[in-house]
Amino acid sequence: MKVVKVKDYDEMSDMACSFLIEKIERLQDPVLGLATGSTPEGLYKRLIEKYNDRKVSFEKVSTFNLDEYVGVAKDDPHSYHYYMKDKFFQHIDISMDRVNVPSGMAEDLQLQCEEYEKRMVDAGQVDIQVLGIGVNGHIGFNEPGTSFFSRTHIVDLEESTRKANARYFDSIDDVPTQAITMGIETIMDSKEILLLVSGAEKGRALARLLNDESEITEEFPASILKRHERVTIIADWEALNG
Ligand code: GLP
Image (tube, rainbow, N blue to C red; front, side):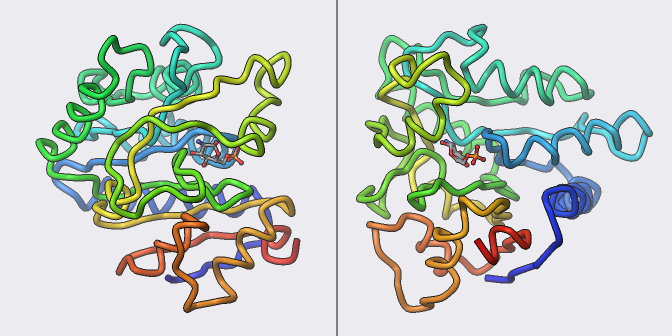
């Protein structure tokens, strides 16, 4: 894992933006794996700015999002569908038929998981997966204890995750209890991974990831990244010292 240390959230977002633009320019049909949460918001803002300045086009780009809440409709502002459209897709020239976000409203959720996996294979797998990290070390919505061999699946969300995400809802009771997420093995299948870490509240998780090179355990999902050959972590001062 390559660690890039930056000053703050803005510098992390600038660097992540340049990183993705370089891939988009170099690859024939770039397939981006995208994340939600507050961490990548600055990245999306900058990519939109670059698009507006005609520095990048998303015409040839396909995307796969990591996860979505179960039971939340696409047009609900709490859904990750809505987040992605609102914060990114509607501002750029991406073709919406190349955009993939798992549906938490599918009648047959198991089938939806299998179809999502198949679509990724058909697209030639994710070239570069953007990741954030949960305070408990989750990636996507893969909570501690998730099998390293998991593919896209339905998960029960931990209390700490629901608490962390309650800021987007009126109260914690409104936070969904389940989500659909790419599995750990699905994430590991991506050709390259970019993990963004910002803020003191992520300090413990980041320290655990960086300080003990030998610890690879399902109890700390992000630890699997040590087995991937191409991982770049961009972390800011607060996260590194939090
Ligand atoms: C959320 C998402 C993850 C995200 C993580 C961190 O629960 N499912 O994909 O990376 O937790 O979120 P944030 O960036 O808001 O701290």
